[in-house]
Amino acid sequence: MIKLIGIALSLCVASTAQAEILASYYTTIGPADRVNSSGAPLTDFGAILQQDRANAHRFGRPNPGDERDPFFGVRKMRAAIPTLFARGGNGGDYWRIQANSPYDITILVFICGSGGRPAYLKVNPADGDGYSGC
Image: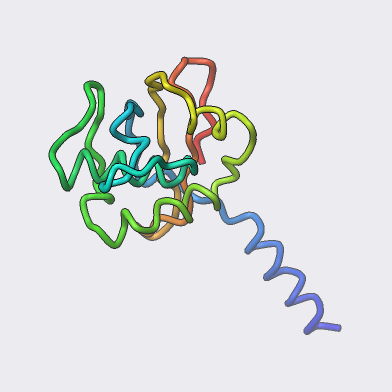
């Protein structure tokens, strides 16, 4: 019985642990972010975010309005962006439509995690309608 109570309490504590905002940045997704380094079109928004950060950090070709971030200057961290995006619950038709849109879009990206380690990304249109945070 005591063991069961201990397990239940540990589950409650684990479920209430909140991720914190480790960093956030605004970025503009443009045509160069929607193709990979070989010029092939990207259709997954997580991959587009990864290319955006590669263009900003690795290739030195940010879009106007792109801000720097403290995590994705490292190739290994950029490689994790599609997974971090998927973990953030950013699915849905909106991002599928944006992946195939010919128009620039400015977004606000929250890098969420704990202990200085990113766990997921929350991505919001930068339209001022309210942001999800972590």
